[in-house]
Length: 353
Ligand code: HEC
Ligand code: HEC
Image (tube, rainbow, N blue to C red; front, side):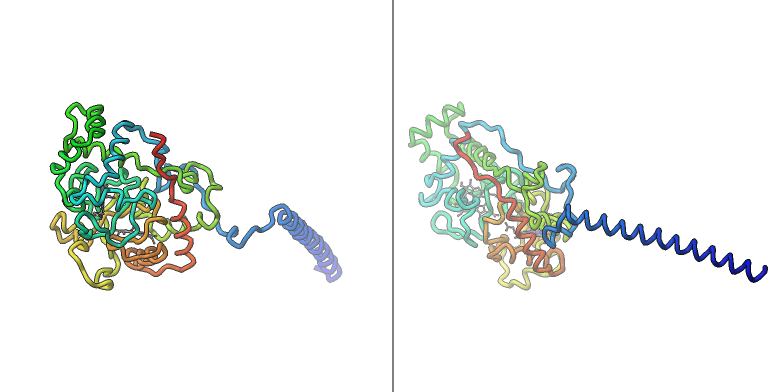
């Protein structure tokens, strides 16, 4: 190739190159303009909005389901059960009723680590809530009872200092009870009927329509960005592996201290700490408890079967340490607590029965 023709060739290439540069620069310029325009349309709200938003296509796909908005029950039974639930005639010394410990104005608990029943006898464990209790798969901390009826039957001796047989003559002396029982049960006031009425009343104690349930039903603005983030951490840390289903718990047995010896660290071991071992006698069940429901948990301190955690944050950190085996970033713990606050449902409206 001759020198001058090579020169010409190089010139052509240079021209083409500069044209390409012009095109590239043009494209970059356009992209910057588009980006600037986009930012004006969508200004950044807060640093959190940079986090990926949680998306929920259908509540069925979520590990937690909403509580039904209403339940169908026999209104007369529920009314009778409500009356029995608040009646001190049911306790040996006529000093306590179910309401004394399961205060419905306090999330179904008395907010004490231990409670005092008839004859001032102290309970061995913290009082759990009766709200949404019907959605648990077993009853009591160690899941000793398979039905609500069996649970109520067992209560007579443990907290009321009575046998149900002893209660019947007392109720028979109250004309109002005689009438109310007769209207529902052909055999009047009997132990199974007393238990049946209280059990149906308990089935009525649901707290639907929490903000989280509204969110599950498709109202995505029912939760704040921080609460949604808390739900995301609740799922990604693995809390949801145990606390799930309609009651955000209440449907599994799990060991307290899966990844650490909670009881050795706490000290003062009691028989109640053996959990399900006391029911089955099986070594595998030592320290195993029914995973409690987290519905309304924000309003039911103190926490755990021993009532050892005073605050939700404390309970969350204990869970992370002993159930997940890793410490929780405190910012994440706060967000999880914010999420748990959205599980507080609407109060029980007795007028609607
Ligand atoms: C002295 C306080 C006290 C009184 C009074 C009391 N309870 Fe309880 N209740 C408890 C405690 C403590 C437990 C947990 C027992 C356990 O796990 O061993 C409990 C458990 C329950 C449960 C099971 C909750 C669950 O999630 O498994 C139900 C239901 C219940 N009580 C209903 C009643 C009814 C009905 C009455 C009245 C007849 C009553 N309670 C009276 C303290 C009380
Ligand atoms: C391996 C199963 C498991 C995992 C994972 C787990 N929990 Fe628990 N959770 C339990 C059990 C079991 C209890 C009851 C312990 C006891 O009191 O005996 C409990 C109790 C609780 C309580 C107290 C409830 C009450 O009414 O007293 C809270 C709050 C709680 N868990 C939140 C969480 C959070 C938040 C996470 C995730 C950081 C988590 N849990 C992870 C099994 C689990």
